[in-house]
Image (cartoon, rainbow, N blue to C red; front, side, top):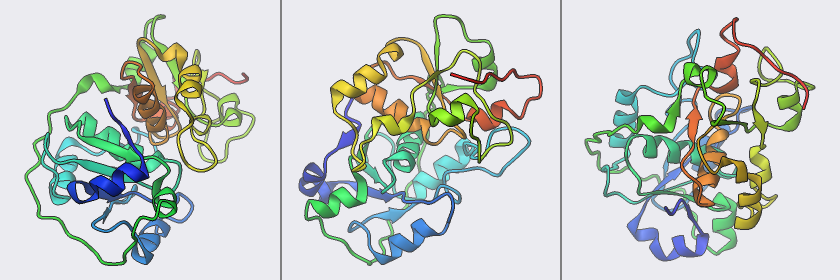
Length: 272
């Protein structure tokens, strides 16, 4: 399954794809929208993590709850995506983490014709791609989701997983160990989880590391596995990378750490 597209390939295919600009900054939620207004790929539409890709906060579900299927259908229909036919390319400028969230949501809704631009906006410009400030609006469609329940793991699934199912924590090592936690109210990790930080799969240029390094980092994912992060966003990078490296499609614990710790009875581990 092709999940990444290079800037040079996108230069050739640009006219045949629907582009989604997913740039975002957790510290400055309006920054991605500002950067989009200042310049984006021709024809691209902007999608916001907070406004489009996240449901309202509740007692459980984590910091970025996955939208209900009705909301995802409405979003993808508004963007002009026809399930199964529209070729979609998502990009950001943050190592692919927000674009991967869109990739995962579309895949979860049964739309496989979606890829992430390797290297994002910066790589596009470096390849000589055009940038515009013109705003594009797609003709809306009716998007009928065909959910893929095997892609998603619930808190209960994580709690009751078998010994043969590997659990991956995709956060930074210091958050995994519990030595540093600046986002969530509790530090540590889910007992039994292996730490494979998502940033280890993305080079400093924002491009994904080569296939060999990616396969080495995710080798134990070759089988049944569940990935999680802080709120179900950056773990999508690891899911995408696993598919790109040829492994079976892992499950995503969409609520992730911030959901896990919302249940007082759930155990917490610290250290490496």
